[in-house]
Length: 114
Image (cartoon, rainbow, N blue to C red; front, side, top):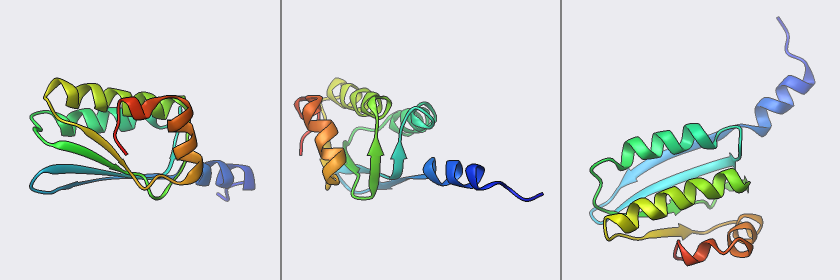
């Protein structure tokens, strides 16, 4: 069965990647693609599972994050609150201009460090 151009385009728009890398002092969460209402809930659950028992700072590597909605901001807020509860910090690393703009105008750098 052949997929229509609309189905292929929709799949491509919702493609994203999530990767966890642990260093001595930090948990690096790399998100690529789009972080929006389509995938934010599942991403939040995966991150929540990974943070259980974690006593490290979190660094969001968003260098290849192309797009983020308010649902994505909720993921950042959840992680930031989780880290603060453990006395740790959340950092945003290399956001693209549009993602940086969304984080900045929403005031989220008050919760996450640059």
